[in-house]
Image (cartoon, rainbow over all chains, first blue to last red):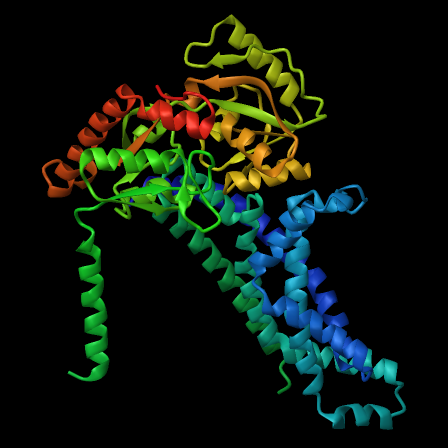
Amino acid sequence: MDLELMIDSLPKLLNAAVITLKLLSVSLIIGLFIGLFFAILRLNKNIFINRFAYAYSYIFRGTPLLVQIFIIYFGLGQIEYLRSTVLWVILKEPYWCAIIAFSLNTGAYTSEILRSAFQTIKPGIIEAGKSLGISNKVIFYKIQIPIAIRQSLPAYGNEIILMMKGTSLASTVTLMDLTGVAKYIISTTFKPIEVFIVAGGIYLFMTFIIHNVIKFLEKKYSFN
Amino acid sequence: MNIFKKTIFSVLLSLLVMGNVNADKIRIGTEGAYPPWNSKNEAGKLIGFEVELANWLCIYMKRDCTIVEQDWDGMIPALQMRKFDAIMAGMSITDERKKVITFSQGYADEVASLAVMKGSNLEGMDTPAGINLTKPNADAKKALKTLTGALSGKTVCTQTGTIHQNFLESGDVGSVNVRTYKTQDEVNLDLTSGRCDVALAAAVAFTDYAEKSGKSVVLVGPTFSGGAFGNGVGVGIRQTSQMGEGSEQGKKDAKLLADFNKAIDTARKNGKISELAIKWFGFDASM
């Protein structure tokens, strides 16, 4: 064990963890909106809209994130027509390709989490709102969405942790995130065990923080 | 002993046995993704200059060999962890690597070059055909200056953990925007997509790709050798000291190194290396 290397690499890896957190937070925010949008589509009675939303979540939950990121980064980059469009400004950058892949992926999972949360809302609550003369729209925004979000907190906390670990795939498209920098240090020191232990420790610490924040929120917004 | 314990016991036992089955075979690690040095054909079989050379060297040494595939970024750690006994993967002999492994004498020269897509404004740079960085002469220094200007602000792509990355980060060509990839294939893809303005690798890696893909990848600037580019490509072997000087494995490794050196000597003298180099590279890269 090379303790000196572990201590030396810590600041570099912590710096890289900032990129990891940036990737995570940006894709979670975009993914939450995508998820909410598709969860609402899933609840739609129209079979086409419903099936469309189902197909989206089915495809993105049914394929590995690595494959998705490769298709978006290397796959789309090979289409010559695309390179002549304005879309290329975004797709040219590995950072945005990663964000697109992560957002679409977490969006698919989030839509399923929110859909099941919507479906578990007791009809009595909605009926109570109606009996008070509150409009359907207000019931949806002020009653259903808040309850659904509270209901989905435990499952969504898991999704955040899974996504945080998923961001390590950003290193496969040249981004210098936590895993990317760890690999870079290994490529010059040839000591994978030491460096990956430090990187793993940082990931674990981030999980610890996320886990506790979610637990705090669960308690704060408890129904009891 | 119940069935559960029995299963665990037998699995552990078989793992122990498996670890020793190949004790007398030489396992040679290669990347299988750096044509024409080493790559895989459509059937998934390893082919290339180093695969054929390895087979010849093994026949000469009268040893059984298996060639093992290993990702480039884990090549040296895998050797140290005894996943295989020797590296033949287009790995240049550099001082940095010599700190952790030993090398046989070089068996081929790797000539590095920059490449761009046809029509790039980097084409037609005024530099000598080749520069040596070990003791750069006036021409080489001037060429580095030209390159520093030409590459500033450009995205230069290369494979992770290579001599090419070392060179780009050495400051010899100023501070360039380096982007690193896991494999050379990915570098080639992003060079053609336009995400990379210019790429750096073995010249043959680009010419091979241009030929096979039909993409208009062209070499620019001088070819590089010496300095950060090391002293040719050799067989990487564990340092004897790693396994303990007098240990059985240490002795085996020392003998392996001597055997490889002798075999390479013979292959060079009888023209085998030149023959294979001309077959795979189109020119004699023996050294």
